[in-house]
Image (cartoon, rainbow, N blue to C red; front, side, top):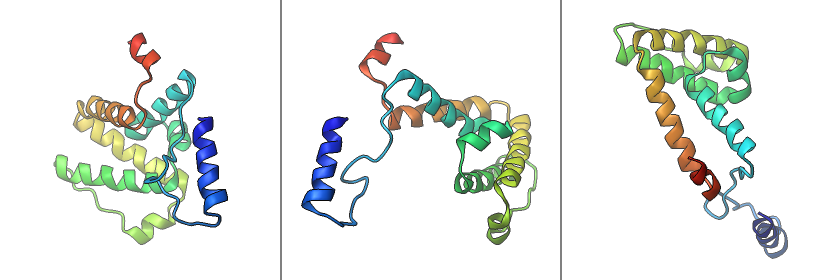
Length: 146
């Protein structure tokens, strides 16, 4: 990690001061999960974003923009994957909703969806595991533990 920091500092503060073209293409800006505890915390957030129906878990795991996107996805899933007809929330109305209101709506729609399609929860857990492993590949020591 320290070599990456030095290279980053050299490039953006010494060689190209005030440059605005820093991006993921040049240097990975994701958090490096240095310990097993870091991985566990991040893994739990991935799971909570995908399947949680707990207000406190969603409060910690998602920001408002993610909640808006998740709510729109749940409503779409209810409309296309079930016989229910759930009205879409118009974007101007969605922007007016505060974080607790978005979480409450998301919980209501997720519970409906999981009640109608019981296998969806396990499918989403598998998808979250795949996305997590892609973003944060297991280290050599973790691979040996499994």
